[in-house]
Amino acid sequence: MDDTIIRAEQLTIGYDERPLMQNLNFVVRRGEVFVILGGSGSGKSTLLKHMIGLYPPLAGHIWVDGSDIATAEGAARDAVLRKIGVMYQSGALFGSMTLAQNVRLVLEEFTQLPEEAIDLIARMKLDLVGLRDFADHLPSEVSGGMQKRAAIARAMAMDPQILFLDEPSAGLDPVTSAELDALVIRLNQSLGITFVVVTHELASIFAIGQRVIMLDAQTKSIIADGAPKELRDHSEIPAVRRFFRRETMSAQPA
Image (tube, rainbow, N blue to C red):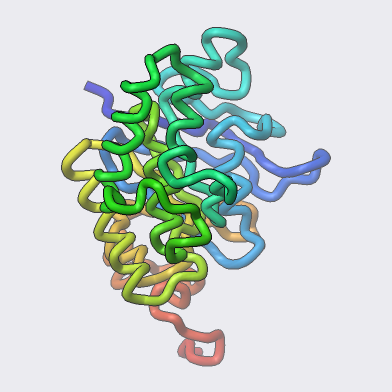
């Protein structure tokens, strides 16, 4: 049985006909934590935006649970979009709304559930991320880590099969970042959610990444695909070794 939930085939991405990455081929397996990494400007967040359907590819395809997310229209597109949830780098919470209201907004927009059910689901999602006691707080009244957790709760509002996280550890201290990593692991293991995570934080990559792909701006391609520790210890590609071992060019043997 094929356990692929996302498949990229001969995918070229970029803006205004200028490719950042060309001819990408990779799969994301159902129920795994899949990490997209690479240096600054390599196109990590751009790839994520294409994977969630914000931008059409310059060439190739992205299949999400069997549907081409770029070409699906109408009810078919709505159906595939309901399978995904997204947490953006900043959290992107509405500052004038409480955490519960931020989560409720998705349910109010896309369901016809009664108010009582919407409120119950919103508070259940916040409970899942450890924010039961902060449901009625504004984003400005909680820490940056709590804002990220609330954004994950909102992304989970419609019970998606796949959660996309864009730089979830950005701006967080190491302890808070580790707590967020632990949350991703718990949600993955307890609910079976597939995670696609964009990050360059090595601690997070090793903590949560079951499999990673590494983008390379120079070659405009994927230069590594595998388990992070295996790539660190056994990759024969200098750029991959430098990334995982935090080595500079001068640290490499001649």
